[in-house]
Amino acid sequence: MTNKRNIFSRFFRVLVMLHKIPYAYFTEWNNRRKRKALAAGIYFLSILPEFVLLAGTFLAARGQDGYVHLVNVPQKVVCYGLAGLAVLLSAIPLGFFDDKKICKEVRQELRERPRYWKRAIVVYWAVIVAMVVAANIVFPAFSDKTMPVESGLEWTEDMDF
Image 1 (cartoon, rainbow, N blue to C red):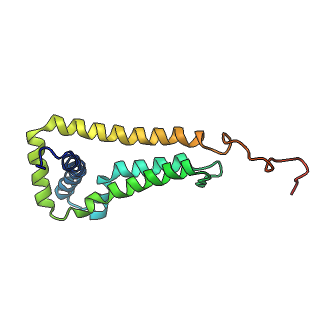
Image 2: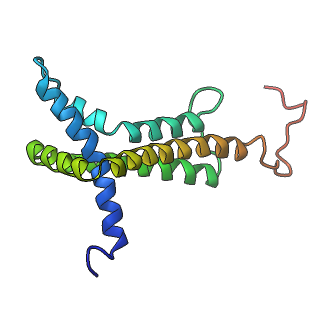
Image 3: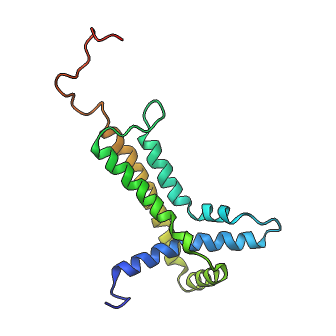
């Protein structure tokens, strides 16, 4: 299959470019400053959407005591799935070694199709926010309070501690 017809290669190219754009932007911003920031700071700023996804997932999964209690399978699937996705997406910028080459490639892409990449970034953020909102809706739906009580395990008043 050629590159034009292979949808997976186009999807991953867009996904990598969505990570290269903020990385190049923050790298060029850092190069213009007198006091240089650490490379870890630039990496963190480029994975900000993944951090939002991870934090939103764990905020949705936290219980009333503030800790994450995954008590049933649907909660585990949602939490581990979104957390795994966030970790995998945050690993994309780890392969960006040549800053000048990446900045040049991003500038060229933004010159050729600026509206496409602006829309792509907006859609990417919208998808991240939608996943966080969906996780916040799904977790209360699968909480213990909505799950049926198994027979023989209900609370009685003679069970004082």
